[in-house]
Structures are given as C-alpha cells and as structure tokens.
Length: 287
Image (cartoon, rainbow, N blue to C red):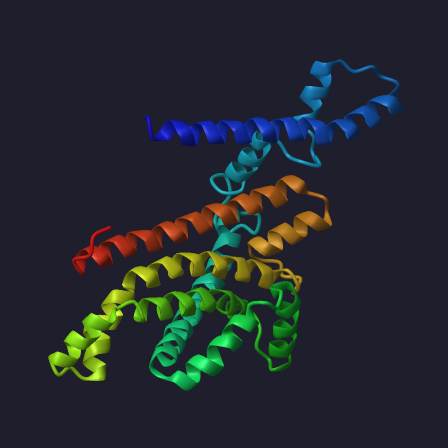
C-alpha cells in the first residue's frame, strides 16, 4: 500500500486538474447557449452541463472511459466502430515495422562496432536521419510507395521501422562496446576468434542495453504506425479513428483513441519487459 499511495496521489491530482480544466474550457459554450435562450444558469447547472456535452472542447474523464467501454467491450471486434478492430490494424503495422527496424538496427550496430569505416560514415547519417520530422517524411514515403504499387500495411510499417531502428542502433552499439579491455584481453588469452568473442562476450553483454532500447523502439514504432495512417486518409486504424473524429468534431472519439493507443503502448512495453526479465534470468544476469 505504501508503494501504491504516491501513484494514487498523482493519479488523483491529474484527475482533479482534468475535471477542473474540462469545466473551465466547456463552460464558454454552456454560457453562450444560455444567453441565446435567455436562461440564467447556476453553478450546479454549469457543472452538470460541462460534464455531459456531446462535443466538448475537453471531454471529462468519465466520458472518455465510457466511450472506451462502449467501443471495446460493447462492440463486436469485427465492427468498424470497435477500437479493438482499429487497434489490431495499427498493431499489425507496428509489429511489422518494429521487426524491420529492430533487425536493421541490430545489423547496423554490428557493422558499426566491427568496421571503423561504418562507424565514421554510417553513424552520423543515422543520427542526422532522426532530425527530419516524421510528419514531413511520412507523406513522401507513402506517395513514393504508392507510385510503386505498394499500399496498405507496408508503407505504415516502413514509417514505424524508421522511428524504431535508431534507438536499437544506439542501444546495441553501446551494449556491444560495453565489455572492458580486460575482458577482451582475456578472450584473446583464450585464443578466441573474433566470432567467438562476439557470441560469447559482446552479444551477452549487450542484452540489457538491447532490451532497454527495444522498449523505446516498440513505443516509437506504434507512434510511426499511427502517424502513417494520418496523411493517407485511412479509414482503419487508431490514427484513422482520430482523423475521423477531428473531421466531425468528435473530441470524445479522439480522446478515446488516444487512450487506446496509450494502453496498447503500455502493454507492448510491458511484454518487452517480461521478455527482458525471462531472458536475462536464463542468462544468469540479475535484474
């Protein structure tokens, strides 16, 4: 209970601020409607109305929770109004992009560590690539791939891979270089080849760094998948759900999709964390 108390305190403070902001931001519309109707409103009337508007400027927390419940538990997963359906579409692109980005990042990191030319030439380009805003490059990627006849899941996955590969590269390079000179000298004393040093020393030493970067990469990959859905006018996916809500002023729909994405990201990071604990425990590393 002592550990949960600080978390519950922060959550309670956030909810209180959220409700206060919802009342303040939604009260303008309530007062305008009352003035047009020539009605005098009490404080309780304003509070009641700001908590139940159909298209509020800022939805109240209970409105977002209700929308999440209605679009998950009370909808068939095959329904196009189900967040489970849209979440699966986004998750598919996320996992494919994450796999591509992780594979490319690990291979690039191995090349950087073992080849000085790649270290001097490729690493600066990898760093520079992350300075390009994803909202600027995503439409270009989609247009180019569409001209090649590549549509659907792959363009979104490539955008996801673009965001996820860099954390993996940085983390893996740091991990592969983590063995100190004494450990490397010991491997040479055992007459180990470069390949044996990699598999028995460098790679095991890099695992904690790799899993830390994978947690960042999987969250970035989800962001990439959502961003990839925005410029295409997609009708499926969490990004499409947000886009549709913005077209029709359905702020509750937008916020519920945002929270669904946050919950999905937390679950993905949690799964990577479980894999980290299991893997490192089997390797004899303390957590």
